[in-house]
Length: 275
Image 1 (cartoon, helix red, strand yellow):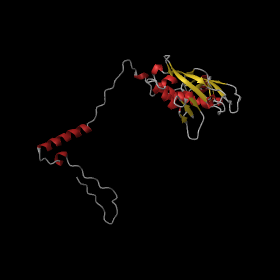
Image 2 (image 1 turned 45 degrees about the vertical axis):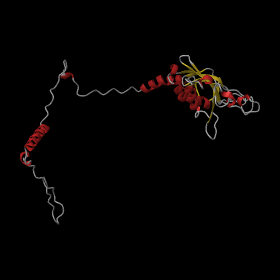
Image 3 (image 1 turned 45 degrees about the horizontal axis):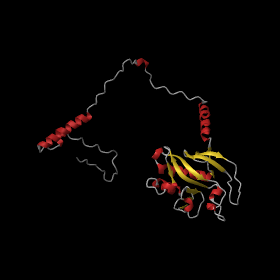
Image 4 (image 1 turned 60 degrees about the horizontal axis):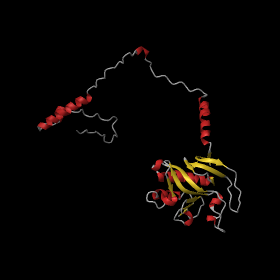
């Protein structure tokens, strides 16, 4: 079907758009040259009849015992909360939040312990200005309460949460505790005469000898490093400490670290030192 639009020559656009010519009847618009054409024409008519047929409204349903006289025109608006509602909420929740912070140190709820008095320097380079004594990190107990500073406590918490716990996984029910064998001690590196002050003497270091599982099993660094079953766990603990800590030393570092992982928060320009 073609609609011819009449344009006024020299007079501009028409004032109104021309009305389209009415569609011819369906019965005459399709040239019937084949029996299939008649079937198409008949089918199209059925489709159009069904398309424009009025849809009957569904019958109304009356619930048993329903009285229309008791129905309301619209749902009632909820009553506004009393003015003292916010004050009551704050009074109930704030003490609980304060309670959850009790026993935590270094501004982190996952680090449990106590703040202790400053440790004076017995040798030049030793001492801790703001030490803490940590009992657990990320729900994992420490066999003894290491005396360290908050930077080291936060690094320890990150390592346990993101490194130790995933390395152990579900084995033995998961991690229950870490066996700590050294923390603050005013001494030289590896206790050698004339050596530099160890990071232990600054509250920056901690030595971990084993991980204790919830079923009572113990994975030691000394035996686990080369054990077929435990090696994956211990080596994963070692590698995951690189990053949270500036120094990580294991059994392959030297003869002084055969039975434990030494981790400290000393920082180097070249990045973490891990052996």
